[in-house]
Image (cartoon, rainbow, N blue to C red; front, side):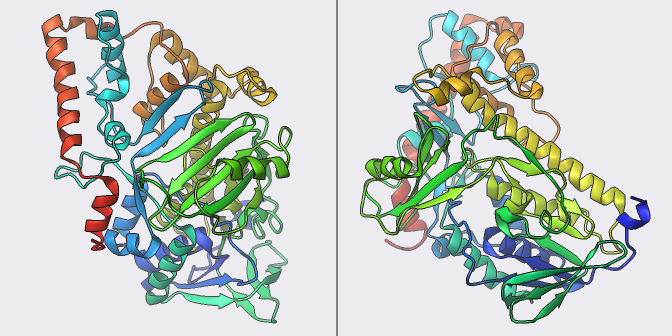
Length: 500
């Protein structure tokens, strides 16, 4: 195809978002808040098409998104029944009796040449018995169900919240900024006969909605990006075999913990996410090894509290669109692909796609270099996240079921195998390019899943025994003192939101 067919000099004045939910309203809120005076934004949403709406856990970059949109944290938390999240507790992943924590913070103190785990490995040789997690503030706070905003912002956090309420919260912000919501079901996509660009969306009631740029937030079906523009799909199910989730909400019982629980089972894993008013529960599984009926039973047998809704099965296929920007259409959210919910990256990928679009916004028309760069960054970013998620399945001691034997023995992407080999043999880990997860995240999961590096960096041996003692004890003491000063998580929320 010639470059003329890929490009257009038509100014972008009208942006049409196809679909609501978290992705649609995040896009609408960002566009209207950050460049709204330059464009007109219309969001098409049907009351007859429910959103997936189970994405209740997030990661820290969402705080940056909220700051950009000038969202007040207390207002947001009240509206969305939000709680704080310090990380994820992984139970039964390495083996059915093992548990570790992936936190949002740093562990210990790195030096210019080596990350902290090298110092910790050396300490084990010298007779120290303290666990790696004892040097991490977020983990220790989570273990004791404590939280507060610290004076120097040393406690890294994200949120648990009700995704449906969040969409409604962002809708109000968007409409105040001039976004027009058009109720209706899209029945036809009108394309330019010469270059294939989308020109309008036709609704069931006969309404025709014209646009210059279209954002596909239509969910898994990819109404615009796939059904119309045939972007293609790269299937990752051979690396990430879970293909279904069953979700249910229950009444709150027990403490409101500041972390997500992820508990592995014979054919996948289950989540538990505490909100202010309820608990979100779900079971992720591979349908090759577990039926829908057995999955629902397994989920319900393990939940606490009265059910607030009927369990809902959600099928998915791990992978990504080969292109997330085609012609004058950008896919955001589930329409762009889905890795799986394990590390709470879905909302983050929505956020990143929105920011990337704003950075490359085609105000003077769609240009091929912008499209290529958007697609390059999207591919690179999702590949790094893909590898991090696969790591949880590949590196395991579990052989107690056919599912785990498959995961343990499967071939993985070369990019992941290289990182596993480097850490296993040499104890080294490096953050690469646009990798979402920092070195400490890779270290926590690799060691949590059972990798013990064969060596540590020689620079740590330069520290004398006395220096080592002062260094390690100082970090542990500082973590312990800070945690003891924090109030219980639930108590802080009650005070912070004026409920006590």
